[in-house]
Amino acid sequence: MPPTGDPLARRYRRLLIGYPRDWRRARADEVVAVLLDTATPGRTRPTTREAVNLLRHGLRARLGRPASRTVVAWATLAAVICGLFTAALATWAAWHTARPLPDRAAARAVVAEVLPGHEVGGIDPAAALFTFYSQPLRARNLDSLLLGDGGEYQQASVTVAVTSAPTQRQEVLALARRRLDETGWRTYPTHVRPDVTCRVDGCTPTGAVTEIVTARRGDTALTLTVAPRPSIDDTYVTVGLSRATPTAVPFAAVAGGLLGAAAGWLLFGWVSRRTERPHPAAGTVTVLYAATMLLWWAPVLLAAPSLFRHHLGEPHPVWHPLWEWLGQPALSLFFVVGAGCALCGLALAALPRRGPLPYAADQHELLG
Amino acid sequence: MREPTFLILTALAGGPRHGYGIIGEVNALSAGRVALLPGTLYTALDRLVAQGHVAHDRDEHVDGRLRRYYRLTPRGQQALETETARLRQLATAAETRLRALRPRTA
Image 1 (cartoon, rainbow over the protein chains, first blue to last red):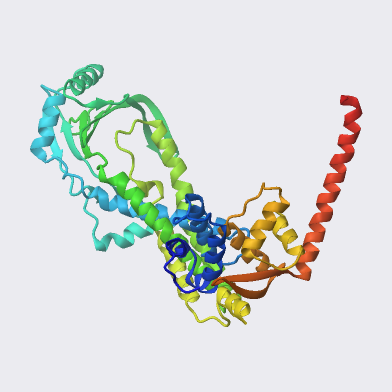
Image 2: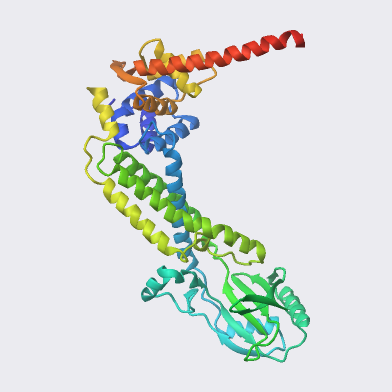
């Protein structure tokens, strides 16, 4: 059916955008005719139900393999993991909207505010918002990052050592808590970590404990650690200052996630339609898809539950960034090898087919 | 076999029909319970064509609108017969139990 001046037909035709181009070429006139037949007289716009139905079934048609009952599940698996990784990448970019970490003077001022009368020893400034072995991540570190040390890429903090003569631990904690409350910090329950000594045959508790107070004010998070005994340089309290999650991060996560999931669905659909048999690499592409999903999902399934338990176990004024929940970059080698498999699958899907695409074949049959 | 698929095959068992005709027939067969939307219908038709249960019959143009007719294939007829026998067996079993139940509840 050629385009007409009928606004309803034009709108129905526009809603077929969810279907792949080959399908539209073969079936658009027929489907629009049925839609017009079922429309009540005088209507000029599709109903919401019709629009949702056409978009939903269009996305299903994009996957090809109309007789398959599982292709939607495989596409969902691919779309969700693509969405998670692009969301993580977007949050990483959004994290860089955070203000620089406090400088020495600002860090000293915070400690003077929270622990008045205590002496500040050394101040260890952070080299960047996220660091790799306390240094900004550089291109030359990529091999270490990929080959097992990825977990060292972490959020950095400015650390201030407090070295004045120790009073009673409980007094320090009480003073810090009171001052944090008075100066507008939101405090979290004190976390108590048992002290252990480790030898070759394992670790044993010493009976002493390290007490940790966490707090947040604006875009700054504070971690005050009271050790069971002073360290070699007489430090008995350390105060760490880091940045809270910037406001842009959740928005970036949602936008990046949706875009990535849509791209994942469309790419899966393209590969699925291209590699419907007969295709010279149909079997190989299926194996590459399985390898990609395994390599991408395994780090997520390993990291997310353990990080969830870690979050439940101690207070977190700032949640760990999204990529850590996906096991990145700790298990980034899995991701990179999986990405290699995905690219090989895409390249093989682009190989010329032995026969026409299924919808083109349908069209040939229908019109012939 | 899901109910809409069963109804589409049943609609085509009466002879070749176009999309709008199938929607109307399915609605009538189900006494108005099943109102297929075109998107749902064409996903089901794509599946049934791929399974070899339904095939393209002919095209007609009515008032400038394309009407593409579909017909049941022998394979589709066999699938419909198998499903009908299954449903009949289930319905008979349920009826037998209900008949036995009625005197006691009366």
